[in-house]
Length: 151
Image 1 (cartoon, rainbow, N blue to C red):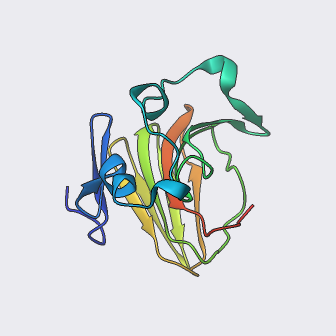
Image 2: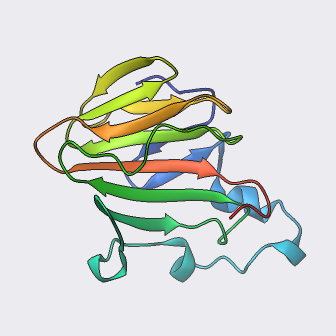
């Protein structure tokens, strides 16, 4: 699988961002704005008792926007033939990575299908979406960096 936009590659549970691990990136930042990074707060395991229910499934934040500087990693689970929300656009770019199920990706007026281990890059300010196009639960990762102060 080719690297998308030079950003990163997911391998096992490791993530690389612009050629640096997240911890390396933060180690280069000023100490005043960086939380103390330890093995305890740098490793997150999925816990069903910590999921956030949605109308069509659930979400689990492995990394929320308050952990570092807005970079996030979220798991979304979506019921068959449903979508978490309608296609939309925002200033931040975004990646989706399908773990399980069949996805339909939307970018502007085009669609494509994706199976497990398929990624989808959404450029900034472009209409995009993802929906479950199958009969089983769709599970995918969402990788996004929120702007400072974004809700």
